[in-house]
Amino acid sequence: MDRQPEFGLPGVALEPGDHICAMYTGAQERHEILAPFMRAGLAAGDKCICVIDPAEHAALREELGDGIDLEGCIASQQFALMGQADTYLRTGSFAVAEMIAFWQETVSEAMDDGQYAFTRSAGDTTWLRDTVGSFDDFASYESELNHFVPSYPQVILCLYDIELYGGEMEVEVLRTHPKLLIGGLLIDNPHYVAPADLVGRP
Image (cartoon, rainbow, N blue to C red; front, side, top):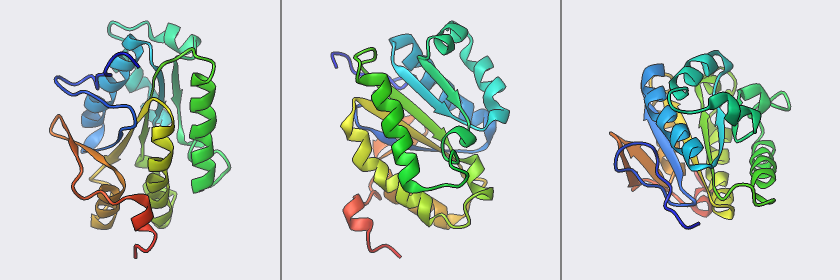
């Protein structure tokens, strides 16, 4: 693509293929990350996919509405606002292969006809605490995303509320994301472990 995509936060630029972890505390802090990310994409003409608990849809739409024809973006399918039942749990339970297939189908449909030059996706994980007994499967999914993300001009932003999870989750999240968003800065993650090296993780 000809332009370097902007995250939406001051001074934060993206690279195609970025798989980013953003840890936050509480819904307001999440919206302060997520809304600028999506707003910048909609303004730039990117395909934007946002997966967040349906209970939070109204608040996010309100955050995004300023300066954006949000209803028009939804009607044109530039902006897809979805919940966990449509995505992570679309077959009734979480499965790594099913979720990777969801991203493959959704992103390829958006980009293969040339309508969009770039896709940005975001997935929040507040549903995860009460749905998946062990974080191992989800960590495997996050690791597998590192094979998928570079296959299209795209960025995926993963959001974790650190108040909901313990230290084990934080370790796995750090190991599976090449980029971290910390204090408004996007940095290379020194704790990242490539998928091939995670096979033998405990």
